[in-house]
Image 1 (cartoon, rainbow, N blue to C red):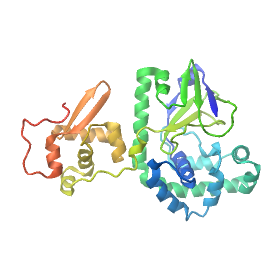
Image 2 (image 1 turned 180 degrees about the horizontal axis):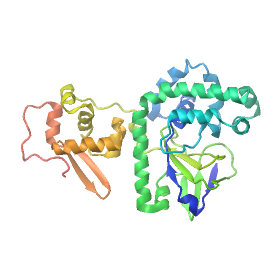
Image 3 (image 1 turned 90 degrees about the horizontal axis):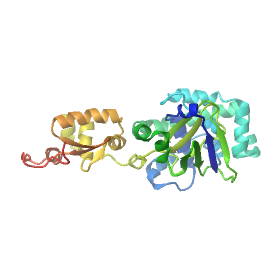
Image 4 (image 1 turned 90 degrees about the vertical axis):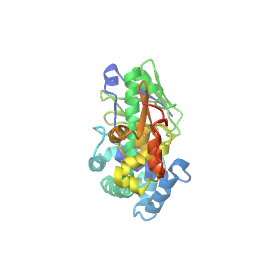
Length: 335
């Protein structure tokens, strides 16, 4: 369904980013409840389906997420990284009339009746999703957040370099900024008629997501800011196994620095390393600084892009070779 988001000049100035643990939980559970699923999430989906097989309210979640997910499941965060408890509290405080309206629109009248009393249904939905969050999202949140933070950092640079037009040009193939109009040709829903969303002075919140791929999701009945959820760059690295690191080297350098050296068999950027290791880009930068000072990592910068590669000395350390590298050996990609 094509969606047009109307933004005034003042609202364009209020475009911001956020990530949402609740949204990731809802979208992840929806993915796990569906047949098939993209191979990139196969490992996580297998784990999720085992958990959902013992979830008391799995049937309720299946009913709720079987069609177009109601927008009350996706409250727009008021800050970049909300506390999960705050998000679940906002879900529980959903207005009963809004609950009914959204459920009827997304699920139909018969399914809405099956949900029963809105307040009781909201309590059960929130409790079930919180269990799913604690079992399926929280254990992986460090790695997930690293991917999401890296995407936000990338988009922030695009905004600095190219303004709003540059930001939306590379956000997703279904998103286009044309002469002050934001058009989203998403695949959510089956309706053919275009939909217009008004930001009503609250601006627009862009939210990278692990589990939206390949879709862009637009809240077509927002309360407050308009929002777009789009696939985060680098999510393909999320479920990869961390490269093994020698135990002895990890004892000397620390696990994270040893893992960094193991990952840098090929040039990688700071955001990509953060996604691979499940730590924040700022933490990666600090560790890389220490490794560069020890001549174990070399960094090459081109404009705003920095690529890192381990040196030959680091390779010898990783593989436990007895002969130290000579001074004439190349140090990777240079400094």
